[in-house]
Length: 158
Image 1 (cartoon, rainbow, N blue to C red):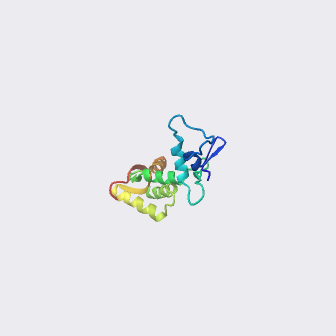
Image 2: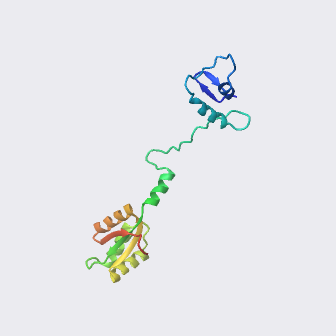
Image 3: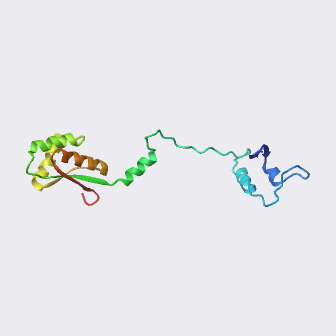
């Protein structure tokens, strides 16, 4: 039963731990440190055969693509942010609705009207809750179209 190869000599647990008398076995002059390794290899074998070491499976990702673990990790790290729309006395209501539909993906006319109305009557309205990078981008686009907006962490309250 071969369990390891040292140089070109095949070693088995019997020849390493129970050498034959008069055999040409290499002897360690100092305490042999390889015995623990060979014992561990011979113990890991299952059944009648020798133990085999499996190659580790390495997850390969294409360049520019994160692994599934990295994506889950980044999702946990990025806290949500609110994009806030502030009321102003300069822009017409129809224009505010058009800008909201243009800047925010998936924004419907009904949602845009409701957000505009809330900002008009209450002075402030939540436009969308998203990751910080997206919130900053939406805020800058709203400001670029002449609307007053800001972002804030969405961790406190609803």
